[in-house]
Length: 361
Image (cartoon, rainbow, N blue to C red; front, side):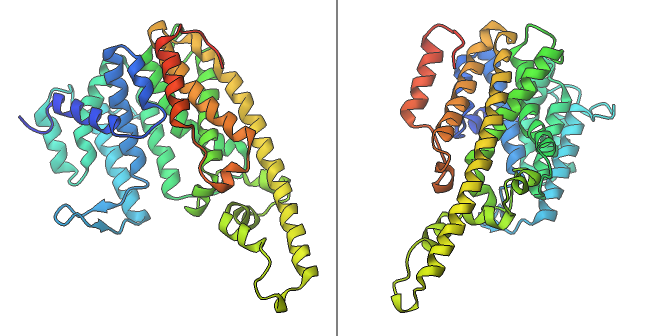
């Protein structure tokens, strides 16, 4: 039996999912078995797609890391799009080349067509889930559009620009998940779409705030440029504030006091504190807006089928608790990545797994 056998593909997706350190994966245990399996497969697809922007190539003979520039990453992404179109069909109406997930010979042919694309082993399972739960293809391709934005980082001029990115990388996965969970209203009905889009922005904006420093050092700035300027910050000043080592070093008096200019030193501290004040106001604005999106996302809970509400409840609670932790002390995002403690995560899991499924913040 080949590596492309459907059951082998399913097991591989489960392995990818269960080995990941994600806020989402623990919630899958709250689902009925068929939906849990489907979510693990969907997660494996999203994980592989996202890694195309970040993970280097590995020499299969030596195991050494190979240089992976922008051109190579885009090449891999385009290859992945073509393989996905062959499996699911394209958005412009072209039918898939592979009719059923059990067609091993057809999936084996993809290996000859797209050599070196390790994600091909995930596709039989993905096709099975798409067919079984009528997952729309658009969100799966929109995720790839978002990943392409990360391969060639660019600045977002307005919040609306960044919201589009959030919908590509977060809301797209949300719609695919909702197709698996089931909804009490049609998937693309107005109340579901409104709440799902708010949820995608709330979750992704929390990630953006949490990872501000890390993303900046990877040449990625997701906060809108016009909002930086509104609060009187340039990109360089913003970067200085995020560089905690530089920030702390500059605040220290020089060891050689013969070169110490007290006036110049205090003037520098004054300017830095002025930058810090502007930065605090900028982040406070981001947090206040993000809170609104969490509020608008909450109505999604009763729109989900009853046997899947717990999974959304846990996901929403974990992200909201993380958001609240940032909100309580925004300067944490300068000093390191903000995370929930292991105890906090276990407590939320126990609450949604063992207690009545009642919606609370």
